[in-house]
Amino acid sequence: MDAIIIDDEATARESLKGLLAIFCPEVRVTYMLDSYKAGLDVLQTTTPDIVFLDVSLGKETGFDLLDVLVNKSTAVIFVTASEQHSLRAFDYAATDYLLKPVSGLRLQKAVEKVTRKGAGWIRSEIEDLKNAIAVEKETVSGFISAPERGLKLSTQKICYIFRH
Image (cartoon, rainbow, N blue to C red; front, side, top):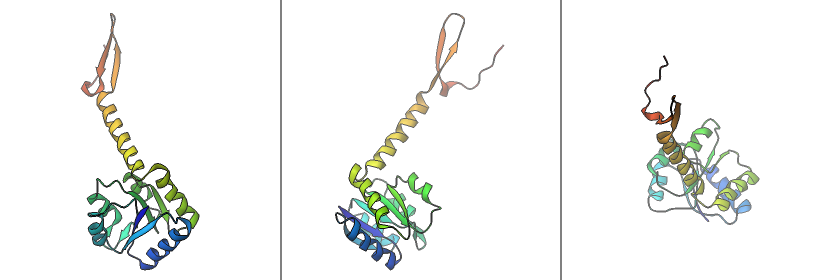
């Protein structure tokens, strides 16, 4: 399984690569990148199985990078020092969110998620759910009881209901 590490701290990149070698030998780190620009350049031409991504990348963020790479089927595992962005990370269909310093066992579990489901599985599941919710919103209907019969109406077409 090919992986890219994108983190602006050299020691964090080296530490993560070392942990992967010990706890996840099936993962081969193909690139270790230090900036948004470097990540963008590489991810526009390659599709790794996993991207280990820091939230803070100097002036830009990992989210900025993901905004540009909308259609990638790569699994994203955030590795960051701040827990404050965890909910936002899952809006981007992140496979996992690891806090620094990363424990080897926690890293192993995150990689197992990708292995178990396949890269991109979680992202496609979330997109399917979003699509299903959008369709549901469009087709929600209600029933109104009338003296002779019931009436089925799309809730999108009801502006207001009043009663005599």
